[in-house]
Length: 135
Image (cartoon, rainbow, N blue to C red; front, top):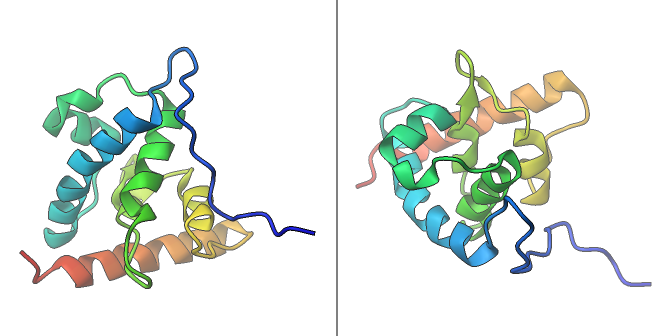
């Protein structure tokens, strides 16, 4: 019996209102440096702030936002922190889709909200530490 993959299988099928995978991959290439800068600054960001800095991301569907965050981290080196953890909601709160994105990327986020918040906090800390002195 074949084992199911943990990563979603991305196909370039475009449903109405959604972007194709190719376009999302291009946008992920634009978003990654912005998230690296955010990590270097030791902060987090929101989709609203991201759209102000990258107007090409305006009007993304929430599902496209999630795929975009997944793509940003998909090709990271083993053990490298999740830059997607730096995208928050409200007053620096974990994005509600972080646990799902983390699990799809092979990072165990936990089953309970306290475990998920702990995993998220640790990923944010690791991102800040890793990128603090990088250029």
